[in-house]
Picture 1 (cartoon, rainbow, N blue to C red):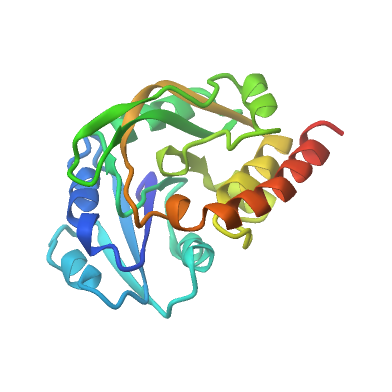
Picture 2: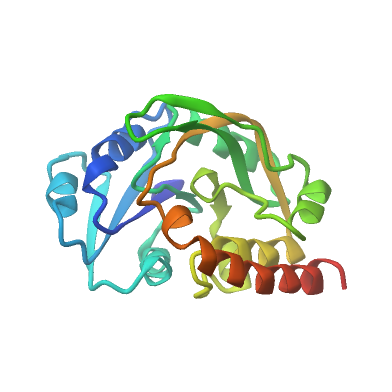
Length: 231
């Protein structure tokens, strides 16, 4: 049984998918299963995923239902002790899994660990360093009252802890932020102070297309964060 289950939801992600898959397969840490959750793509995403012959890859084809449904389907069938989140437009740096797992194994009281990131453009060119969020657990909790405390596609999560708080819920495009408020109410979190991910900035990403919706739901999640993390 693999130590890590890598979960990548994909919906019409053909433009950057090959790079994202290669970033996973080129990890220094090798003991993982790789669940590619094709959320009813109508482009060539499925063909691109199927072009890789690595036995660790499992392609799960779903009817289009959105990222939350896809993620929770992945959680149902995963077999690892830890979940590593990957997005179809980002690139994991080679030592990402190794360093995240090493931290989790040495800090059993931590339920989720992320990292910082390097931002890149559509061509994969360097834009800058994402020198946030906070690093230590108590500072992370305070940060979460106003901001998302983890870069979602940078994290590793303990499966048991995630199951205890109830997996993902449908909070329009900020499902991760809402989840972290539940996780941090019961467990510790951490961010490694080094970039382990190339985070791609492009016009078709959800943070660009659904900015107003995210802002609206963000107000609600901040209220939940205060309720869960302060009182």
